[in-house]
Length: 363
Ligand code: NAD
Image (cartoon, rainbow, N blue to C red; front, side, top):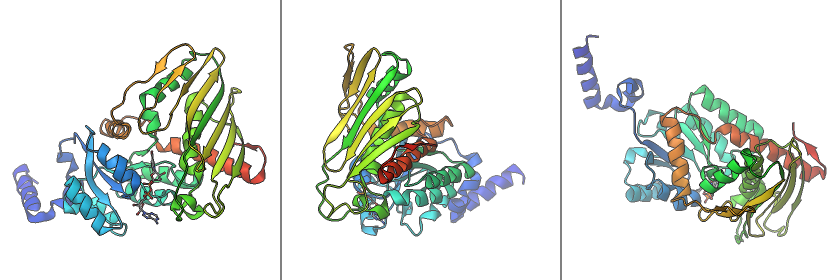
């Protein structure tokens, strides 16, 4: 087609309203985006209280749309955050997001058993995907999610916000540079008193609730990032304090990890007690963060007098900006799907150990 005719055709197509349907095929004409449009899937606590406000602070992405089962809720979000009507989806018409050039990233913020379905559907729609922790209930789920994203040439990143947090990054650096020598023990504890008395998905096995999936992954992830190693064996024990609320899921889980170097990790997670500290004991000293997984105020110290209290304006904004830059610049993600998978491989071994009452070797 001669270029003038091609231009006329494009003009007619666009003014004729066909632009929406044609847009993916015209991407070669588009200027590279400076800011990515994010659609939040699931407008519960974390999306409402943390992610949407953070998306007002981000430099490289913005809240472009939502996916919700409640039309009323979606409309109130639309009024508040001022995105166009066409960027509202429900769980049934979600796949049509494939035709929407406003949305570059789908952020899955649903109960844990729904992560796989929505990550796979988002990938098939050609969208980059951010998935909340825990990545999914099983290794098979995580592998399917990674494959779907690879097959559709989109990026998959897991919402492990602590890995973007500067004091956590300093703790990781101390370990990598062996500032305190070889690591001997990582103690991590993450939990809160769950005051809910009415059934919630976090208390249900069918939605893969329980303390390990919800809070224990912070400890596990910390044990792995502090040592820089993958555990080779685990011994675990679970407890139920309120059997009327926790049926078939752990209310408290204790687990000990063994690493190839000989380092050990002692982890505690619970919905029955407030726990929030991380300590590393190494040959020549120790260092700690307390709190280590709060949204604000992560701080700590080392036995050689270093204070870990670098400021951060907003954890979720930093995470989403860094993940956006990785997509825009086509660079490696800090926390790719494979990182979520590594944790879930250990989570499966922890449950096996707790169930059998035995040490389990991790394959
Ligand atoms: P929530 O219960 O407050 O919200 C879940 C949302 O999913 C609700 O809007 C609900 O309507 C919707 N939903 C859709 N289908 C559902 C179904 N079948 N059953 C129940 N709800 C359904 O949960 P949340 O606290 O926002 O957690 C969502 C995800 O975010 C979880 O995976 C959680 O682990 C993660 N999260 C991460 C952090 C973090 O710091 N990274 C913090 C909180 C939650």
